[in-house]
Length: 115
Image (cartoon, rainbow, N blue to C red; front, side, top):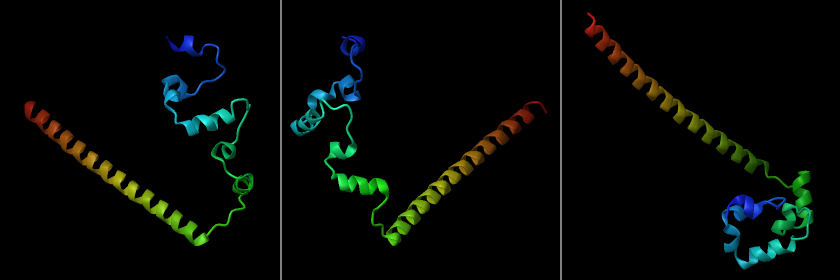
């Protein structure tokens, strides 16, 4: 049975449905999804069982933030980015050196043939 036959009349399908993973779901997941079977829309707070007050606080930005911890996280992220950029530049440098050596060898061989 192809996808058109299976889902031709469906308004929407999930990747799990398409690949047949929905049959392997655990009972807790099936029950959670069953709660929303007649819903036209659900929020992530509803799906994951978060408190509405917590969700509103997250959306409004009204969250207590430890600025020192935030600074440390930003510093760590910047350091990882710089380390990756350094690694990438080393790779580019190595590739250019290898290419330059090969081109030099090729031109030397070409010159020796026609000299």
